[in-house]
Image (cartoon, rainbow, N blue to C red; front, side, top):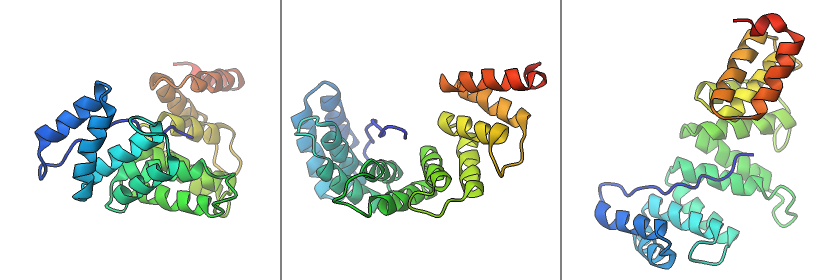
Length: 214
């Protein structure tokens, strides 16, 4: 599972971009409490980017005690306004609660917000939603659906998805094998810095040397 997004979102033009940038700069300089107070002012006006930033600070424990429930609360505010990064991070937090007996619907919530993040074009969300269909968690297992989502994310440049779709192309059951496409995706994943891809690439080249001869 990919880690939470850790970038700040900039203010929209309807707000004072200079003041919002000052708050971001305060955060970057370690003045977390000052930044948090500024973001609160924007968040109270309904700004989804400020809500996202507050959520992230709670998730990381910057300027406040780390509080995942507060992070969820603020991500949800931003996510409901269509903020794709918030939708993705919110899905991630629910995904991480899979063994939490206090929230038996965590997987359903994670799936819901991954789907919303997919609609917002977040490539990592395609990959993580695909894993649900691949494993049959929270949904009926559907390898073909998983493959389609992995492939879409891979085409968007997600290195994890490039590895996943390559593995399915090379060794997946129920998926037409295509060693050349497996090789191409693994090469892209290596270029994107995914070290795990090298291991699969070596395996593929040993099994099918012809694929790896340029």
